[in-house]
Amino acid sequence: MSVNLGTVAPIGFDHIHLSPWLACLRELGCTVVQVYRNQEANVSLSQMKDALSATGMPCDSLHGVFGERYDPSSPDENSRRFAVDSFKAEADLAIELGGKLVVVHCSTIRHEGVSEDQKRRRLKQLIRSAGELGEYGAKTGVTFAFENLPAYHVIGSDVAELLDILNLAGGNVGVCFDTGHANMVGDAPRMMRQVAHKLAYVHFNDNGGVNDDHDMPGLGTLDTDGIARGLADIRYNGTLMLEVFYDVDRLRRLIDEGYADRLRRILATANAQPHP
Image 1 (cartoon, helix red, strand yellow):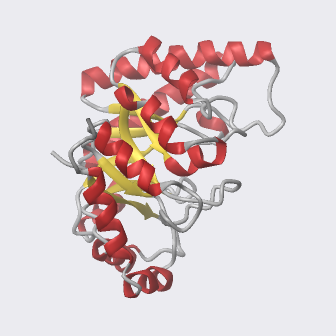
Image 2: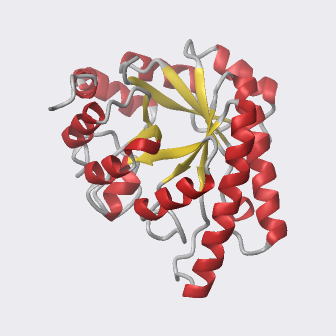
């Protein structure tokens, strides 16, 4: 196996016409998609399947629901239970779509932070949630990939802490490493190497180090060469997924400018023999 290039597939968003949009991503070298549906649009399973059938690319994963209602670290047990049950349903949906992985946001946003006591409670709740999801994943064959997050989330920006949680949880859990989120809090290639033994998926996007811009790799401050070399060194053989939401016109300009060649070079580096 080797590193393959994928793309997010936004379904149910009025401003994105999926077929021509994904046609551009295919031209850029993408071969698989991760479904990301509009949670406010009540998109049905049949609608998702119809949308995917027109893409010409198989689905390998689903970005799970997220937001205040879906917080697996919630101190409120009923809320935590609801989140876990929702992610189990997302695993079932992923299977229906042909995927075997669900991306999970491990905590909600708290720009003002939380107390030390609140953080401890949330960590315990998240370990419990991850354990339950890992057990469900072992039964269904689905991996729950917990995403590293920007620092304004209660938990998730510290990848060492996230690793500790997943190691305690056990089962079918791993890390969805988001390069853009990592670039906002530190040295992204170094952080990716930290999670190597739990790395299940990669969201590949860029920014200027401050905002979650979802730019194409190489158009911000992300060390894309460092990421590519790191993928080779840790022998990653999964999807490198472009989590970018440019409109068709901007994608066409990138294609005309030869951006596909840059992506091919990144893939070639990621698939090279690891350094001794």
